[in-house]
Image (cartoon, rainbow, N blue to C red; front, side, top):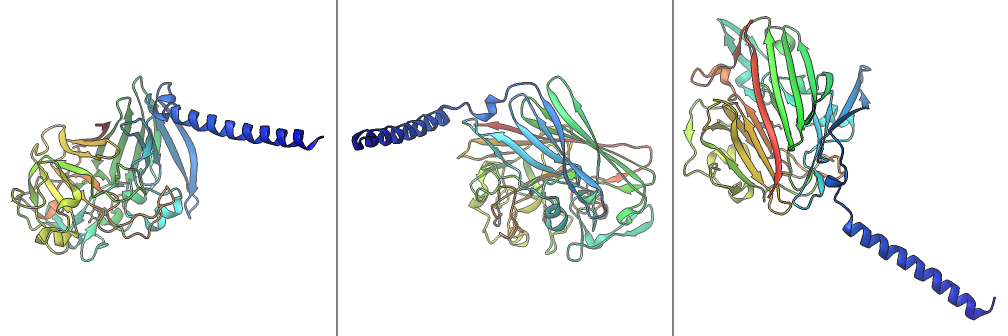
Length: 393
Ligand code: GLA
């Protein structure tokens, strides 16, 4: 082949490569955002996730609604492992902190995404008296009991029952906690139903019954980052909480028993305010929490489903609303995250790279007569609902 033809041919080949690259780039720019590309009705699928050291197999369920929003739930701890929601341009990101390996959840999870129980948050010195009898629970958080003890509901294997309806898809999880487990009285039959609706809501319906008088306080402990997990801190998120009171805490984060006004304090979020604006304030309560780690007394006071909090992330345009029938909401700004945990994205989670909004009864209620009661008696049914509603600005 003459040299000139050779040069022409390699020129043409190079040109073709560039052309293909340009076309591919153009196509990727105009591609339909995944949130809309998906189509089809809601669906749910199950896959193997891992095996616990005792041999129990753990599944991961993927729920998908008609908009392409996707939620993954583990049978271990009832954990919301991933929540993929669109931003204002339709691009999906996982907004829940989590791990992609079961062993990470077992070894080192700071309660990512789990069902917390039997008693979410703290009980002072792990002790309470009910009907004249004193119960001593594990002290697994300094001098106090936290999130159900050494092996709470976050570390139990739940039975799963998937279901599909016209505009939603869901997973019913059940767990029977035997009498005396973690030193709580009564056999507690717990059921948590997660439903993903076509309007991008995750609805959580909790139910429990007991064989003996006991105390119960269940919640979900998802850490959110509306920028996407592993994508920086949450300090720019704008928070609104519909509460004019809260329960101040002592140095060990146990409520003092007071129901105090939020007005005039840096804990007041009745007006939308960036989480980071006042988080380093010298306010004694903020110093004790190492940031926000407080129970807000919701203005709705637990009378029916109501908007408790609204969080807006200005860059992505993602919005989260927490709707609940519970009297309290723990706002925790991820102060104990320390940059050592590597999440689903492969990125490390620095301090305050996720926040939790835990709908609940007030911490340490069994030791405070002025707080709404958390006692459950045989024949009664504990029932509560919380919704995480996603949208965009
Ligand atoms: C709750 C508590 C926090 C912390 C986290 C888990 O939000 O209030 O103090 O224990 O759970 O790390």
